[in-house]
Image (cartoon, rainbow, N blue to C red; front, side):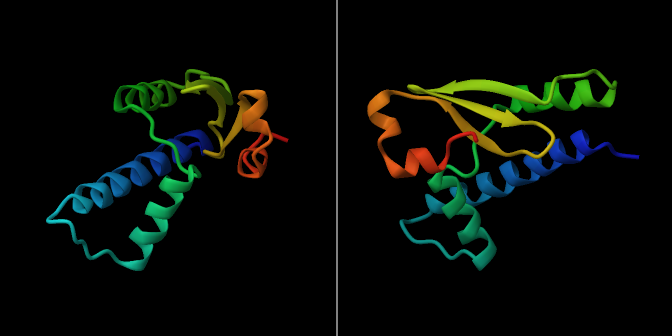
Length: 114
């Protein structure tokens, strides 16, 4: 029986694999044919709705989940000058910290943690 956390991890793995497939096709001769689902996923990656996680980190999370080790619900990580929070139970990310000037951007504010 899968836990909510392991389902979330598996969902992230599938998203990453599908995203990688879309990005791999993007380099083919300058043109690509993608179905509607792949296009929507690519838009989410470009907009920042989806974030990439290193394979090693994902594999470690899977191992921890398999043995029932508590990894905590929230994990913070830095990406450039921004600090993000990952909710491991839902897979959602939100912006925790950034520069004062960046907070003035409406797109940044929309991605903040509530």
